[in-house]
Image (cartoon, rainbow, N blue to C red; front, side, top):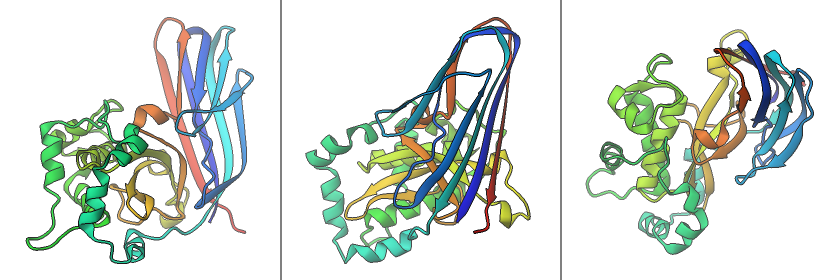
Length: 295
Protein backbone atom coordinates (compact mmCIF):
# COMPACT_ATOMS: atom_id res chain seq x y z
CA UNK A 1 0.00 0.00 0.00
CA UNK A 2 1.31 3.44 -0.97
CA UNK A 3 0.51 6.17 1.55
CA UNK A 4 1.03 9.91 1.62
CA UNK A 5 1.28 11.35 5.14
CA UNK A 6 1.09 14.98 6.22
CA UNK A 7 1.91 15.89 9.83
CA UNK A 8 1.68 19.52 10.98
CA UNK A 9 2.60 20.68 14.50
CA UNK A 10 1.94 24.32 15.35
CA UNK A 11 2.80 26.22 18.54
CA UNK A 12 1.28 29.65 19.17
CA UNK A 13 2.85 31.68 22.00
CA UNK A 14 1.05 34.33 24.04
CA UNK A 15 4.32 36.29 24.27
CA UNK A 16 7.28 36.15 21.89
CA UNK A 17 9.52 33.11 22.35
CA UNK A 18 13.28 33.04 21.77
CA UNK A 19 16.06 30.45 21.75
CA UNK A 20 13.69 27.62 20.85
CA UNK A 21 15.60 24.31 20.71
CA UNK A 22 13.72 21.30 19.35
CA UNK A 23 14.07 17.73 18.15
CA UNK A 24 11.60 15.75 16.07
CA UNK A 25 11.16 12.02 15.47
CA UNK A 26 8.93 12.04 12.42
CA UNK A 27 10.91 9.99 9.89
CA UNK A 28 9.39 6.57 9.11
CA UNK A 29 11.60 3.55 9.63
CA UNK A 30 12.71 1.58 6.59
CA UNK A 31 12.57 -2.13 7.27
CA UNK A 32 11.29 -5.42 5.84
CA UNK A 33 7.68 -4.21 6.14
CA UNK A 34 7.88 -0.62 4.90
CA UNK A 35 10.00 1.79 2.87
CA UNK A 36 10.08 5.58 3.09
CA UNK A 37 10.59 6.85 -0.47
CA UNK A 38 10.33 10.57 0.15
CA UNK A 39 10.21 13.01 3.05
CA UNK A 40 10.28 16.78 3.26
CA UNK A 41 10.48 18.79 6.50
CA UNK A 42 9.64 22.51 6.64
CA UNK A 43 10.24 24.76 9.66
CA UNK A 44 8.67 28.22 10.08
CA UNK A 45 10.49 30.46 11.00
CA UNK A 46 13.17 29.01 8.78
CA UNK A 47 15.83 26.93 10.57
CA UNK A 48 18.65 24.57 9.64
CA UNK A 49 18.10 20.89 10.38
CA UNK A 50 20.70 18.54 11.86
CA UNK A 51 20.10 14.81 11.61
CA UNK A 52 21.34 11.86 13.66
CA UNK A 53 20.28 8.43 14.98
CA UNK A 54 19.42 8.05 18.65
CA UNK A 55 20.31 5.10 20.90
CA UNK A 56 17.39 3.04 19.57
CA UNK A 57 18.16 3.68 15.89
CA UNK A 58 15.42 6.26 15.34
CA UNK A 59 16.11 9.10 12.91
CA UNK A 60 16.08 12.44 14.76
CA UNK A 61 16.14 15.98 13.32
CA UNK A 62 17.09 18.87 15.58
CA UNK A 63 16.90 22.63 15.02
CA UNK A 64 17.01 25.96 16.84
CA UNK A 65 15.05 29.19 16.30
CA UNK A 66 16.80 32.00 18.15
CA UNK A 67 15.07 35.25 17.02
CA UNK A 68 11.77 36.27 18.71
CA UNK A 69 8.72 34.50 17.25
CA UNK A 70 5.08 34.06 18.27
CA UNK A 71 4.44 30.94 16.17
CA UNK A 72 6.47 27.82 15.41
CA UNK A 73 5.27 25.46 12.68
CA UNK A 74 6.74 22.07 11.80
CA UNK A 75 5.44 20.45 8.61
CA UNK A 76 6.41 17.01 7.34
CA UNK A 77 5.32 15.37 4.10
CA UNK A 78 6.25 11.78 3.36
CA UNK A 79 5.49 8.89 1.03
CA UNK A 80 5.68 5.39 2.45
CA UNK A 81 5.10 2.02 0.80
CA UNK A 82 3.99 -0.73 3.17
CA UNK A 83 3.75 -4.48 2.67
CA UNK A 84 1.64 -7.24 4.15
CA UNK A 85 2.92 -8.64 7.42
CA UNK A 86 1.94 -12.09 8.75
CA UNK A 87 -0.68 -12.09 11.48
CA UNK A 88 0.14 -13.55 14.92
CA UNK A 89 -1.75 -16.68 13.92
CA UNK A 90 0.33 -17.02 10.74
CA UNK A 91 3.49 -16.45 12.75
CA UNK A 92 2.48 -19.18 15.17
CA UNK A 93 2.62 -21.68 12.31
CA UNK A 94 6.34 -20.90 11.88
CA UNK A 95 7.28 -22.10 15.34
CA UNK A 96 7.56 -25.73 14.22
CA UNK A 97 6.18 -27.11 17.46
CA UNK A 98 8.85 -25.63 19.73
CA UNK A 99 8.02 -26.47 23.33
CA UNK A 100 6.38 -23.56 25.12
CA UNK A 101 8.28 -24.33 28.31
CA UNK A 102 11.62 -24.13 26.51
CA UNK A 103 10.81 -20.66 25.16
CA UNK A 104 9.71 -19.37 28.58
CA UNK A 105 12.86 -20.78 30.15
CA UNK A 106 15.07 -19.07 27.58
CA UNK A 107 13.49 -15.69 28.36
CA UNK A 108 14.79 -15.94 31.93
CA UNK A 109 18.40 -16.56 30.91
CA UNK A 110 21.29 -14.15 31.34
CA UNK A 111 21.62 -14.01 27.55
CA UNK A 112 18.22 -12.35 27.26
CA UNK A 113 18.89 -9.94 30.12
CA UNK A 114 22.17 -8.81 28.56
CA UNK A 115 20.74 -8.52 25.06
CA UNK A 116 17.46 -6.77 25.86
CA UNK A 117 18.12 -5.03 29.19
CA UNK A 118 16.57 -1.69 28.20
CA UNK A 119 13.31 -3.41 27.10
CA UNK A 120 12.97 -5.49 30.26
CA UNK A 121 13.15 -2.85 32.98
CA UNK A 122 10.09 -0.94 34.26
CA UNK A 123 9.90 2.71 33.19
CA UNK A 124 7.98 5.77 34.29
CA UNK A 125 5.09 4.99 31.95
CA UNK A 126 5.31 1.17 31.94
CA UNK A 127 5.51 0.84 35.70
CA UNK A 128 5.26 -2.55 37.42
CA UNK A 129 2.98 -2.00 40.42
CA UNK A 130 1.21 -4.78 42.30
CA UNK A 131 -1.93 -4.11 40.22
CA UNK A 132 0.02 -4.44 36.98
CA UNK A 133 1.61 -7.68 38.14
CA UNK A 134 -1.80 -9.10 39.06
CA UNK A 135 -3.15 -8.13 35.65
CA UNK A 136 -0.22 -9.83 33.93
CA UNK A 137 -0.78 -12.99 35.99
CA UNK A 138 -4.47 -13.02 35.02
CA UNK A 139 -3.52 -14.04 31.48
CA UNK A 140 -3.12 -17.79 31.84
CA UNK A 141 -3.73 -21.00 29.94
CA UNK A 142 -6.63 -23.29 30.71
CA UNK A 143 -5.98 -25.92 33.31
CA UNK A 144 -3.89 -28.74 31.88
CA UNK A 145 -2.71 -26.70 28.89
CA UNK A 146 0.58 -24.95 28.26
CA UNK A 147 0.55 -21.49 26.68
CA UNK A 148 3.32 -20.46 24.30
CA UNK A 149 4.92 -17.03 24.49
CA UNK A 150 3.18 -15.95 21.29
CA UNK A 151 -0.20 -17.26 22.47
CA UNK A 152 0.22 -15.40 25.76
CA UNK A 153 0.97 -12.16 23.91
CA UNK A 154 -2.06 -12.59 21.64
CA UNK A 155 -4.26 -13.24 24.69
CA UNK A 156 -2.85 -10.23 26.57
CA UNK A 157 -3.42 -7.90 23.63
CA UNK A 158 -7.00 -9.17 23.23
CA UNK A 159 -7.69 -8.88 26.97
CA UNK A 160 -6.61 -5.22 27.08
CA UNK A 161 -8.61 -4.46 23.94
CA UNK A 162 -11.83 -5.94 25.33
CA UNK A 163 -11.59 -4.94 29.00
CA UNK A 164 -10.70 -1.26 28.61
CA UNK A 165 -12.75 1.46 26.94
CA UNK A 166 -11.22 3.78 24.37
CA UNK A 167 -11.85 7.27 25.73
CA UNK A 168 -9.67 10.25 24.65
CA UNK A 169 -10.97 12.31 27.59
CA UNK A 170 -10.08 9.80 30.31
CA UNK A 171 -6.29 10.14 30.39
CA UNK A 172 -3.49 12.57 29.57
CA UNK A 173 -0.05 12.31 28.02
CA UNK A 174 1.38 11.62 31.51
CA UNK A 175 -0.87 8.64 32.35
CA UNK A 176 0.93 5.49 33.54
CA UNK A 177 0.05 1.84 33.00
CA UNK A 178 -1.09 1.52 36.62
CA UNK A 179 -3.42 4.52 36.17
CA UNK A 180 -5.15 2.77 33.27
CA UNK A 181 -6.00 -0.24 35.43
CA UNK A 182 -7.67 2.09 37.93
CA UNK A 183 -9.57 4.20 35.40
CA UNK A 184 -10.54 1.33 33.04
CA UNK A 185 -10.39 3.63 30.02
CA UNK A 186 -7.78 5.45 27.95
CA UNK A 187 -6.19 5.69 24.51
CA UNK A 188 -3.69 3.72 22.41
CA UNK A 189 -0.72 5.15 24.31
CA UNK A 190 -2.15 3.87 27.60
CA UNK A 191 -3.04 0.44 26.21
CA UNK A 192 0.47 0.07 24.78
CA UNK A 193 2.11 1.01 28.09
CA UNK A 194 0.02 -1.53 30.00
CA UNK A 195 0.87 -4.32 27.57
CA UNK A 196 4.57 -3.43 27.75
CA UNK A 197 4.53 -3.43 31.54
CA UNK A 198 2.81 -6.83 31.62
CA UNK A 199 5.29 -8.28 29.14
CA UNK A 200 8.22 -7.18 31.27
CA UNK A 201 6.65 -8.75 34.36
CA UNK A 202 6.97 -12.06 32.49
CA UNK A 203 10.51 -11.32 31.25
CA UNK A 204 9.37 -10.72 27.66
CA UNK A 205 11.30 -7.85 26.01
CA UNK A 206 8.78 -5.26 24.84
CA UNK A 207 9.02 -1.81 23.27
CA UNK A 208 6.71 1.11 22.51
CA UNK A 209 6.07 1.91 18.83
CA UNK A 210 4.96 5.29 17.52
CA UNK A 211 3.48 5.70 14.05
CA UNK A 212 0.37 6.07 11.93
CA UNK A 213 -2.65 3.87 11.29
CA UNK A 214 -4.48 4.40 8.01
CA UNK A 215 -8.25 3.85 8.22
CA UNK A 216 -9.45 6.62 5.88
CA UNK A 217 -10.77 4.38 3.11
CA UNK A 218 -12.72 2.38 5.69
CA UNK A 219 -14.57 5.55 6.71
CA UNK A 220 -15.15 7.00 3.27
CA UNK A 221 -12.44 9.64 3.58
CA UNK A 222 -9.12 10.46 5.14
CA UNK A 223 -8.43 9.71 8.77
CA UNK A 224 -8.39 12.50 11.31
CA UNK A 225 -5.67 13.13 13.90
CA UNK A 226 -6.88 10.77 16.62
CA UNK A 227 -7.32 7.94 14.16
CA UNK A 228 -4.11 8.48 12.18
CA UNK A 229 -1.48 8.95 14.89
CA UNK A 230 -1.13 5.69 16.72
CA UNK A 231 0.88 3.63 19.20
CA UNK A 232 1.31 -0.13 19.47
CA UNK A 233 3.74 -2.73 20.85
CA UNK A 234 6.59 -4.88 19.61
CA UNK A 235 7.49 -7.88 21.78
CA UNK A 236 10.31 -10.34 21.29
CA UNK A 237 9.15 -13.91 20.63
CA UNK A 238 11.71 -16.75 20.70
CA UNK A 239 12.35 -18.09 17.17
CA UNK A 240 10.31 -15.30 15.57
CA UNK A 241 12.05 -12.15 16.79
CA UNK A 242 10.21 -8.84 17.21
CA UNK A 243 6.46 -9.23 16.59
CA UNK A 244 3.87 -6.45 16.48
CA UNK A 245 0.69 -6.32 18.57
CA UNK A 246 -2.03 -3.66 18.69
CA UNK A 247 -3.97 -3.77 21.97
CA UNK A 248 -6.28 -1.03 20.64
CA UNK A 249 -7.47 -2.46 17.30
CA UNK A 250 -8.41 -6.04 16.49
CA UNK A 251 -6.82 -6.11 13.02
CA UNK A 252 -3.21 -7.37 12.89
CA UNK A 253 -0.42 -4.83 12.44
CA UNK A 254 -0.11 -4.95 8.66
CA UNK A 255 0.13 -2.70 5.64
CA UNK A 256 -2.16 -0.05 7.17
CA UNK A 257 0.46 0.71 9.82
CA UNK A 258 3.46 3.03 9.34
CA UNK A 259 6.16 2.85 11.99
CA UNK A 260 8.05 6.01 12.93
CA UNK A 261 10.24 4.50 15.63
CA UNK A 262 10.41 2.68 18.95
CA UNK A 263 11.71 3.09 22.49
CA UNK A 264 11.25 1.90 26.05
CA UNK A 265 8.05 3.94 26.37
CA UNK A 266 6.46 7.12 25.01
CA UNK A 267 9.15 9.35 26.50
CA UNK A 268 11.80 7.88 24.17
CA UNK A 269 9.81 8.48 21.00
CA UNK A 270 7.94 11.78 21.51
CA UNK A 271 7.30 13.07 17.95
CA UNK A 272 8.11 16.71 18.78
CA UNK A 273 9.74 18.11 21.91
CA UNK A 274 11.76 21.17 22.82
CA UNK A 275 12.39 24.10 25.13
CA UNK A 276 12.28 27.88 24.67
CA UNK A 277 12.68 31.17 26.50
CA UNK A 278 9.48 33.09 26.99
CA UNK A 279 6.60 34.09 29.23
CA UNK A 280 2.91 33.38 28.95
CA UNK A 281 1.02 30.36 27.71
CA UNK A 282 1.35 28.37 24.51
CA UNK A 283 -1.26 26.65 22.38
CA UNK A 284 -0.52 23.43 20.51
CA UNK A 285 -2.35 22.25 17.39
CA UNK A 286 -1.51 18.99 15.62
CA UNK A 287 -3.00 17.88 12.31
CA UNK A 288 -2.28 14.51 10.72
CA UNK A 289 -3.64 13.31 7.39
CA UNK A 290 -2.97 9.88 5.89
CA UNK A 291 -4.11 9.19 2.33
CA UNK A 292 -3.80 6.17 0.07
CA UNK A 293 -2.13 6.84 -3.27
CA UNK A 294 -3.24 4.78 -6.25
CA UNK A 295 -0.33 3.18 -8.09
